[in-house]
Length: 98
Image (cartoon, rainbow, N blue to C red; front, side):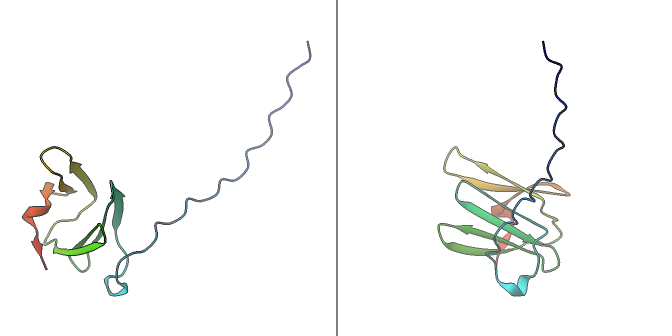
């Protein structure tokens, strides 16, 4: 039986590509963004805005004091979006569309 050969050193990993920017420049940098089931969202705390893009339609919401950091979708009874903030769950229909 031959002795085991030493392992090769690990090669550096390539960084993950950044998500493509799809929002207007005037909103600046999104603190959180993502997509799920064909719906994209981006949150801009400095502007207190939440953007939702679905089927090519872009909607803007006033986020108020919420610091959005996550999203979930309910699939039953149609689909509805809910976001996680420092105050807990925020349903999209609780935010004012602007």
